[in-house]
Length: 75
Ligand SMILES: [Zn+2]
Image (cartoon, rainbow, N blue to C red; front, side, top):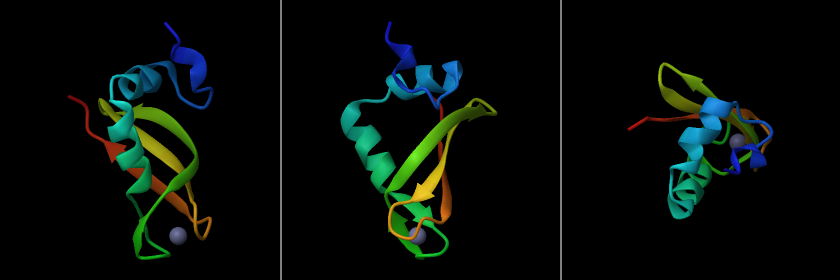
């Protein structure tokens, strides 16, 4: 088990994230809505937590640095 490769993820969040295939992880990370850019952007410096059974990614917009978040619905 290599769950701790995401130090900014809680243990529960890392478990959910690791179950997502790498190509979908990339799609998720590349399609986060930034309210400042008003477009889908890449999320950087993100952390993960679990909210209501869903994975919540919180980080910054790769373009403008604005705070962005993306909810990844659990299975
Ligand atoms: Zn932005």
